Image (cartoon, rainbow, N blue to C red; front, side, top):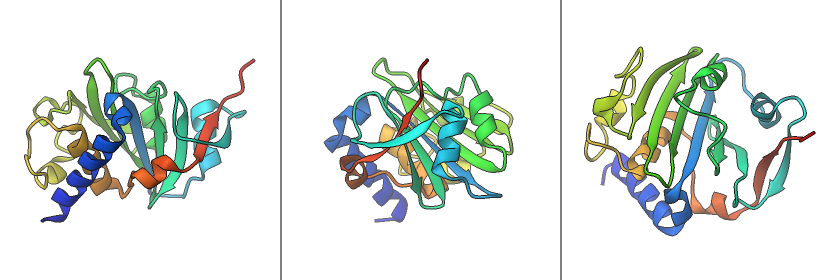
Length: 188
């Protein structure tokens, strides 16, 4: 079985076991190209200067931040921090970095966005490569060609595999079952 198929199968199995992820989530991966970023820096970029990280179980409506290979991943279980339709936060993270943002919700809305060099490069509504638009709508075509069904609407597992294949970030059940660093934003 080709490596790409194994990655898709991994995410199919993950979503079968952690079914709550398949209902809705937001997974953002930031791969710094210039200088490394640390987790506190990412937390402050999202939540402001008073943001903190606290170890918590992966559940509820929390946002979790962790190192993942050469990247930093942000798993937002509520899905409120990033949107491909409001590109400024994704573009801010992509200065000196590449950023993948994958999100879906219980209402069936799903989208993949890719940003680099401070600009949103593509938005793929409904995880459909034929609907990709933006300044570089073919930026991920080299990866799409590797998937079992290239250029067809992506399953959640295929979209997660695409993010992993390009970013090196990996999400698995061991990570989900262990306490992780949750973003805590001070409320006045």
